[in-house]
Image (cartoon, rainbow, N blue to C red; front, side, top):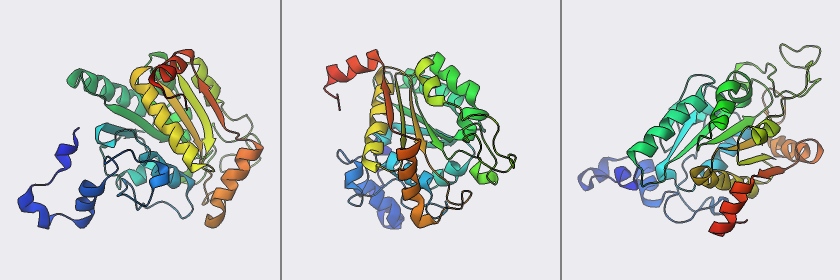
Length: 283
């Protein structure tokens, strides 16, 4: 899509909502915006219906502020807490059936490549751990096997947040949850390692503790997916509602988890390293 389709007919300018006029006149595609510039431009997500202190909502805000080219980006989401925020997002997005988001993204990316062979069109999957690592695991890793040039972002709150806090495959072993009253019986799925061995050229494990780094990693993942191959971003997003975390302590919990068990980890394939070196984007 071109930014031209967002431009208003001059005759209807006065009738358009203020929010829309602000987005067109001062949106994130006007210049090279970064997370550090938040508050200086009209964001793609400024309000949301998610819980107070939601780390997922913070992640979504940072991700949308870090898109290399939002006017030519399509988000493919799935059922979950994240899908509640997509109705507030100011760019194209698709709500797919639960778990098939990577299959839908594959079709969207291929059609865009055929329809616009001379343009860069970014397709970014955003879904929770249930949709990505449980119900949608087969379609997730098979998109990696095939080398689809899409970015997969998983919001890992380590449970099924919008249906009451049941355990998921990403729930740590031993944690008590609905459907696991005596503690989860098997270890957390190591999807980061699976991504590395399934064809992803870039994979990163991180939390909301460092928003600048989160934004930079998301941007790098999307740029590498354009020209090299599939990329994967896994963000720990502790759920204040189901984990009974006071909203004002959500970021502290994320910071503590990064120190104790969710340390930052980044994988870059040889092909991705070569691309970054040749384009002068080592950082």
